[in-house]
Image (cartoon, rainbow, N blue to C red; front, side, top):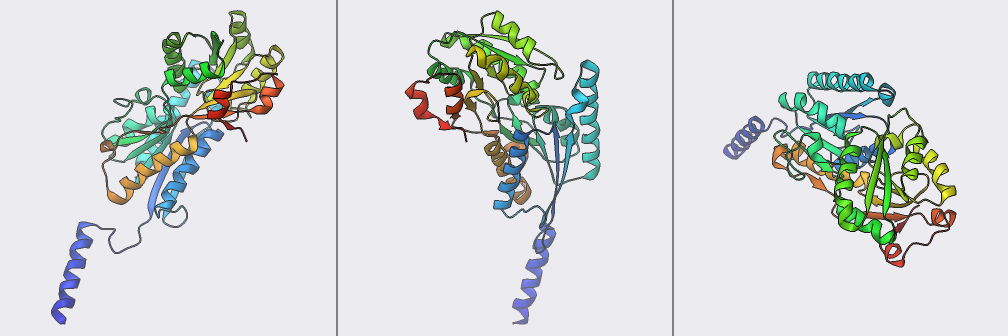
Length: 338
């Protein structure tokens, strides 16, 4: 009996040496970094935390979270303001390295793109969420990130999106996209322009500053023949209590010009929404974070995850406001905006 007891102690000691967290309750430390505080990013953050909780990592119990949000006020301007944002991101990244968390979650492309190198080089695992084009954030491809980091992308093949737009608006030839220098938006607009001709459409665009009203740019595109507008994945549209989409609605509604949102967020005036769900993308990022934290999986070995099925929403109230009837084919595929 004494021999068995002694053997048990030896086995326990060996396990404790091999895995310091064995035999004790571990508290995980998480740092979160994002640029701008908008509703979709909050959805992604909550989806991430909920996935961790499902796997026994619970904020306030065995998880401490320090969330860093670079306020949008510092980017309401031109080049120098943008430089200021980049400096803020790099400063926050340095403080995160000093804090030595178990894992870092970056939400959005700028936070991921400009903070990851410093964090990864310090040996701290990084998981990203709400990045539309992984390559724009420094990933090797749409499916492979690189050593030390991984994540979940909002990426949607623009050809698939445009085919849905064609299904909803069979006669649409030209649509406009007003955007800022937001990394996600620029990449999405460029892809839309490249792939639109394959479905018989043309995309025209206008880049503006984040501080600017959307109206002059949108009016310019209307004058050039825009028959509809597509709102890209651009943080600009979520700022200042959705000021930009409200202005776009006031301009387009009297002209019976439909607005299509490529972001599943509140877009006043939007009639059709096509895209990935920010909450689901956060959940997918949480799946990777769980494997890294609990199983010690190397982040770079985990593929970039994405939502497999595009989500389509239709706002029937906006259909009535525009006095517009969408084809039954799209109504059968879509869910109603709540």
